[in-house]
Length: 586
Image 1 (cartoon, rainbow, N blue to C red):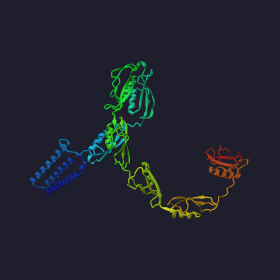
Image 2 (cartoon, one colour):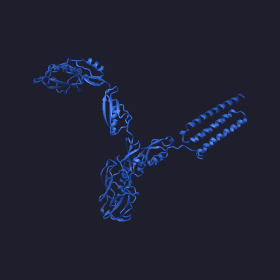
Image 3 (cartoon, helix red, strand yellow):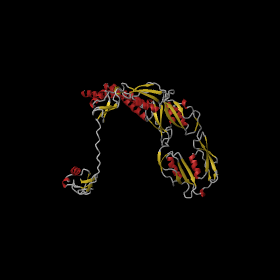
């Protein structure tokens, strides 16, 4: 009986814990499943688990065999339902609604992204960057990761490709001696946009071999490159069957004609079907035999569609971007304040309404930053930087106040008020608290220092000779007494050093007397420094009109002795008013 009660207690505790955990799991799922893509699946699964735990708890509580068996059967059935439901969902037999997530826009055209954003009521902010790998107007990256729930997104910043940068530098190798087809692979790989290819007859180089090139080394993609290519011998020029240039690029047609020695002319026209710089037609039909020595053909090249510029000021930024992308124009943005045009709206366009443009032309759009309002600035320096960056006119006035030096007191217009860009802003800033400069004349340095502290002045002291003021007393101050200045203004106080002393007479040596240098053995030896000190004392006394210099050098003698390379030594002849150097062993 005791064993049965113990088993009942254990089963009740286990089933109770299972019930508690399942309730917690259900509540957690209901609260946080809005962040999960498969929230319907999670809610149903947690609900089935909760019902199963309730059935298990009831099974453990009822001891009557009849009810116990019924509840056990229900629990088993619920477990079967849970497993079966999960299998059906995992195998896609049952398809439940899931929350929509953000997809990756990588390499997607900005026009498609803008349409998607408009459809999903999400703002698309555009930034542009050059790219060699992503086509122009396609997306390079986005600031919100793919897979993020769409319902949590209000705006997305996308980085849009401006195509290859023509200002980018690279190293162009020597192409001389290379076949023109191989050279064109290098040229195209580096996005060179200004390449001219000329052919000429040459008896040395085979046809299509590059003879000369205009530039090499480190260059920009936009630099002009001219290649001179061999046509081979004149006897190699034979009539050829003309190909169909329609749909081929001008570069392709140019290369084919020049490498076959055929002269040609170009005429441009707009085309609604052929892209810009691609051939529309030709003066001679494909299949015609052309003699390079006598015939000249004309290529009709497309300028692209004739693009009629609409009124961009009536369109949104996204609409302009989409329109420009669709018509294969290039778009640049700049921002400006405008007191009439709402922020984010278009102020103007570099291309006026009904202007006719060709594909590839650049259109600059100016977008409004809204009304220009006076901002709050902590210092006059910060205000100047802001005003100068916007090209605003302003006048300054400085006055004493309790505010810190340089702190702004007031502005007209006031903070938050609209600024008319053509008007002059008036700004008043603080020079700090004021103080009055006292009279320092005839004060001692200590007295002057005390006055400087009392009057909150930064004082610096300098000394000058004076015959009028006693030594040690102030003779002059750089700011007049009674002047009103800002606290801690710097000023210099000059202290009298007394009368300027008479200059000492300048001694001029005129003697030409000669002497025999005598150095006593007792004066040298021991250490180099000791020898130098002794010699300087002894020789200056013995030969007062001769100047001696001393230096040390390693040698084969003992330290402190005269070096064997010394210019003079004991016994040398010396002369008054001359300079001599004595070298001492280290």
